[in-house]
Structures are given as structure tokens and as C-alpha cells.
Length: 482
Image (cartoon, rainbow, N blue to C red):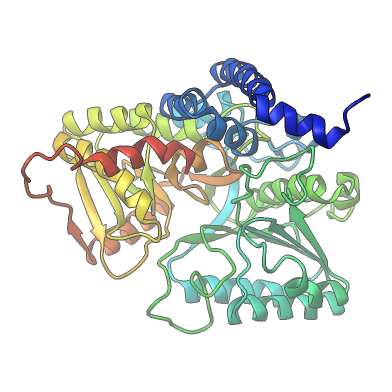
């Protein structure tokens, strides 16, 4: 007589056969995942961290890698519109810095060239950022495109949803793209007033339930707002009280961004279109049909290079651009970032430049909102300090700004942190600034930050303890997975 399924299952468990089968299956899966991991283009520290977790604790490492480990999605690259946006030949104005070494490196890595004819105005406070966003929302005549990682469930987020809904009711085409994880509590009911007013709200890569297109690890960290296809706001500000608001708040984080007009704004709009169409399934031709033929025109003298980075980009142009900036440094390189977890190439490049006598200055928060990341950064900060770099700790509060400034002639701003997740995993956006006058304004802002910083000092020597630095070493090992 045949056993009932439940009885058969209980016997297999009791005899240990089922556990043995699962163990064999798990190790076979781990073998193939290790082979896949070794074939991927990753930072060595990232590869080592995943390798150790898969091999040493496969019951934990294998499922985590299946959920979080993917770095580049071929399906994403194939299904998305291009994220190497380009201007029509008739609209492109020759850029003086198109063949400069750093710009050329970025183009060779897969991004577009610098474009001329822009204006750029930097946003150094949360009040400035909110005022610029509100002003442009109210002034838009045709379209408003906004993408953000976090839409706060607070007075700032509520006010911005109301403003967008008001413009949608007035006939403006409003599209709001929210990361499904970063805005998990606001992407549905909280944004309903905008939908009811005729606006559209998209959710980027939902993870519940898991879809065949995405991964819980691949998040859209880009922050872009584009108005009438010709004016854009870009930087590190999320749409929440911690980042921006109409009135001063002493608890507000210190962030950095810019208002861009001209051809570079049109390129940022192309990045939004690619993300929107992927997230919603709409045809990009529908959105492009809304763009007036005369939208791309010269507004100023700034030369800017728009660079997207992430799983939808075949290479790593943002990362290679930063490497080029460091290695081309003659006099100084200043880095402002909330989280500092570089890979070996970036760290060694900075160390060599510091030892050669260049002014290497790192500005980071004295204490960030992620204690584990602060613990993991100690090793890298110590290496830089011992090489002669200046490590400055920003004291007034959380520093969320992201910028790199080289020789007062080339700079970078955008959404990417100076860590492995931003540089190798997330969907990010960066703008390289090639006009010296604009770079000098950024340097003046960075110098102002130093007035609120104190120098990082070596920690007092302690008696040797076998577990003294264990937590620091573990956090550094886990840093590539954070």
C-alpha cells in the first residue's frame, strides 16, 4: 500500500534523507553561484564578502545572494530605453572640454560627452532646495517629471504631493516616480491625491511580490526633477523633512544639489524617461512626443556632462570618472560624502596622491545615520590619515552632501555616495562640471563646510585584546553588502 504524502514526508525527515537532498542541492546551487560571482565585474572586496558568505554559511549566503547579490541585470539593460542620452545633432553645441582627459575617460566608459550652453545654480541648504522645487512646480507650463528615492510621510512630502496634484488639476502633465523600497510607505495611499487629480505615480522595481525583472538589492537612488523638459533639479535631496522644507529646521540634514537649465536638463529628462518607461511599461515614444522641437537651446556658458550609473548601464562610467579625477589630480582633490567605503582602487589612488604631496581632503559627518557604516569607515579613514590626507569631521549634524572637486577645475555632484553600493549597485545620476567658474563656486561651498569641521585624530592606543577590533573588521567585511 502506498504511503500517504504526509507519512512519506515525515519518514524522509526522520531518516535524514530530505535534509541530505537539500544539502546536496544547496551546495550544487552554491557552486554555480560562486562561478557566476567570479565571472561578474565586481570590486574585489565585494566579491570576497559574497564568496565567504556563500562558501562558509551557504544556508544564509545562498538565499541572500539570490535576493540581494545581483549587480547588473541583462534583462533590465535590454528592456530599458538608453541611459546614454544624446542631443539631436542640430541642437548640440561644441563643448571645449569634450576631449579633456577626464571627460574622454567617461565617454570611453560608456557615457555621453559634455554639453555646452547651460546654466547651473547650486543649492546649499534644504530651504533653497525646497524653494527651487516649489518655484519650478508652480511655473511649469507643460510637464513635471520627478523621481526620488524617498518621499517622506511628513509635512514636506504632503505639501509637495498637494502642489503636484494642484498642477495636475490645472492640466499640467505630472509624473512622479518613487523607488518601491525607499518610498514603501508613501508610494500608494499617500500619493493618491496626485493620482485622483490626473497625475501619474510609478513604482520602481517593486519587491513584493518579487518580479522576474528585478531584485530587492537594485534600488533607484536617483533624484531628478525636470520641468518643461528644459530645467532640472539634481543632487542628493530626497523629498522629505530631513532634506528640505520651507522653513529652517536645526535638525535638517546638510545636503547639496543644483538647478540646471539648457541642454543638460534635457539629458536628465532622457534619464527620467528611461526609468519611467521601464517602471510603468509605457512606450518612450509617448513621452518623447510631448517634447517640443525647440526645447533644447543654449542658456549659458556652463559645460556639463550627465552620467547615469547602475544595472541599466553596461559599464561603470561614473566610477571610472571618479577614478580618472583622482588619478589626474595635480594639486588637490576634495571629497564630500556622508558614507566613505571605497574599493581598493579608489583607496590606493587617494593614498598615492596624498603621499605625493597633493592636498587630499575628505569631509564626512562626525556621526552619520548608519553606525555600522561609521564603524566600517574607520579602516579607510586611518589609511588616508596615515598617508597625509586631511580627514575633516562635520559636527553640526548629518552631512548628506555628495561632491568631488579636483584642482578647482573639474567637479562632480549628484546622488551617488562614495561607497560600494552607490558606485556598483544602485541606479545613480551624476553631473560632471567642467567650467572652472562653476567649480570654484563648489570649492567655496566646501571651504565653508570646513568652518564647521574638526580634524579626525588617531584613536588613543589601547591594550591588546583579541576581540578589540573584531567588530570593526566584521563591519568592514560586511561593508560591500550594506
